Image (cartoon, rainbow, N blue to C red; front, side, top):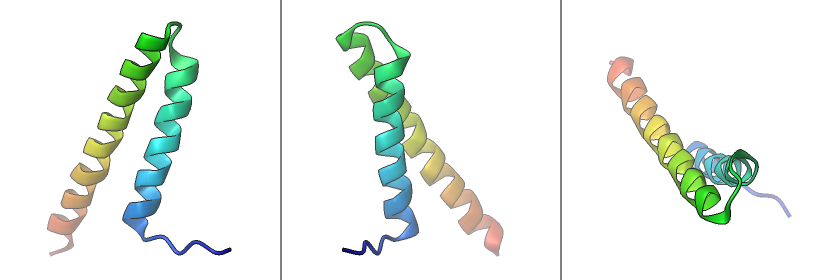
Length: 60
């Protein structure tokens, strides 16, 4: 089976999996892991959309 993802979908999927991995290996307790993973996911979202808008505005 072949996945045909847009750039945005691929970036969101990467952000999801990376935040899960960083949450699991980054903290000690379950509560801290969930909070850290959600925070990292939020930072990824901000970076994806922020850089996307910068590229859009810079394209002219």
